[in-house]
Image (cartoon, rainbow, N blue to C red; front, side, top):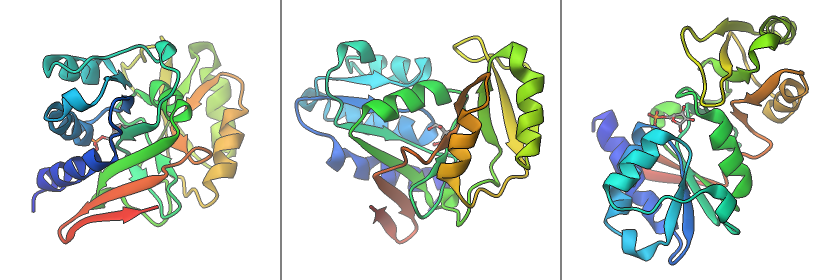
Length: 218
Ligand code: ABF
């Protein structure tokens, strides 16, 4: 199977986690694009969706799926999103696409995070994929020094400004053996808006697309 077929397969499997008659959270990325396309087939079963990016909003609206503001939603049972890496505990690196802040907000608001990935994203230890950190521009050098002290090699994402007017430092060279602890430490650095480590609030369910079918990890 191609990687796209694996993504498509896992995206379709996520439909069984979509609650009827509710608003659901929808993330961003190529795997989620397949999920949005599949969701279009059952769009009458949901009330609408909260979106983590303009890209996903556009795609959903093109399918006739209603997109609503998170502030108007009282209960969000499920958030479906991809990841750049996921470890066996359900901790993830996210934000390769730059939408980590919105993704973290929706993940926190949701009761259940359903992570959809192909098998290439499953790793024993997080860190091979550079960890994105969204930073207020005036704090760039301070945060860079603090991240170096934590053992990383932060590099500014060139020519990139987030939806919130901030920059992203991609931190290379990490081996994140204690993701919950590492997330808390990075969160403490003044000037850090969001760290793309989703460990304190990791995935409740990981659906992993493999050549042998979709594996589920709770
Ligand atoms: C978002 O999209 C991100 O947090 C992650 O960076 C990315 C995964 O995209 P893809 O499915 O294209 O690999 O979920």
